[in-house]
Length: 116
Image 1 (spheres, rainbow, N blue to C red):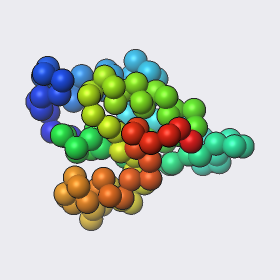
Image 2: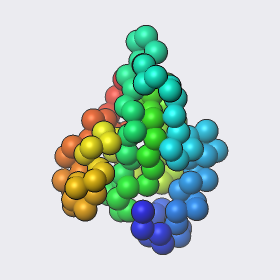
Image 3: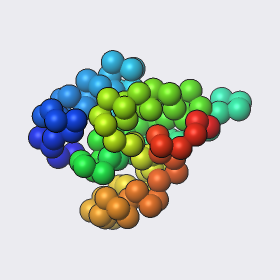
């Protein structure tokens, strides 16, 4: 996570990003199910990574896209750009240094799409 990029004309850094997620109870490293079992009717991505074009990876943890989608859309609105949700393997390990455009192409969902 690179600090200090300008978003919406204001200086945003990792602390600000963390606060934006935390106030919606989406803390970094969040676990929603110890057994990694999705609630019935929900789409979950375990160990998800969230990236934005201007900064790259800004968040990781478990996501229930069905119930968290609106919160992610709020965050995107606050940051002024879409959030892209990737699986763990698509944005970690040997893929961490891939270009942001390549990572975006691997996104399983983004905030500019309909809710799941």
